[in-house]
Image (tube, rainbow, N blue to C red; front, top):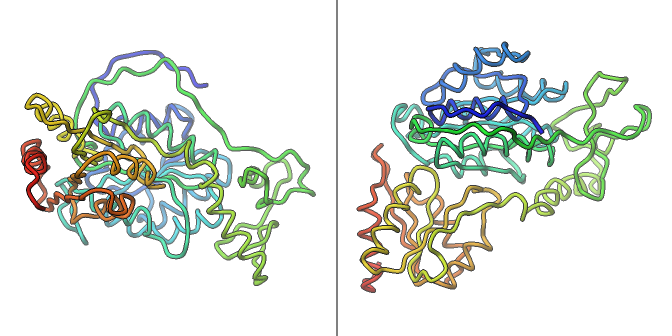
Length: 384
């Protein structure tokens, strides 16, 4: 448990990410400036050295991702932050971190794309890239806040999950959440989780041992005599590359199984007015803020609508969506992309109700009125 002095501050979502990272025990940041995430780096370049940490601006996003992996292997909780184009560049090394089971946190403050896109405008177009951006079969944890408060809290949670599961964790903000300013009461203390350390001497240590909880203990590389092989190749329990089909399959299945084992602890959704809802909304990030207002206005007009808001996008909350779909007639899915999460909601609902995507990609937010119009249409039973 890390203790902090309680204080009330006004800060942006990006500033709250920096504060949350420090509270979680981060001691290393490597990145490259890119709108709209740059304030995270700007804050940490001042705050980290004051707390005994290290800040380094790398030559590009590829090098930054490599640097945080190396720092984590050396025992430091490590963070990098970027936006769309930089997130694309990090993908190969994110895959390396998945295969080598290196705990790191990657913040992506989403903006419009593809390519350079719309650097200063909000979007939610990276939710599929966060899941499938690196190649091959892999599992990933992706958290998505919708306020300054949650930007702080979910940053802490991202580090805790990363350390617990020995895996990279991605924190997705959109430009609105990154730049909105809100009052934040800093907690007196936060729960801080550290990675599991080996309980055997260096000569007996296997860095990728198949344990009952699927998460091998992780030594600090080079400290106390612990040295081990780290590679992105398929490897055996010792960390050395292997072409043995049984070892390759054993590793791949374990990497998936460790997230499946902790699925219920990782997946987190908020339910708003869902108990008697007949029409549903599935919304995340800044778009869920508009959905809150929609629920209030619709309820005032006598329409029974509820909001299911995921704080965890991946693993996808399929069971929660399925239960919601079996309760309501329609689920409206507003998002700042061309329906990336709507496809997942439709898959999870499995025909239990109608799915109504509400998409916007012009760099402007979805308003409560836009969502309310869809709610009113669904309440009348109009066909989609």
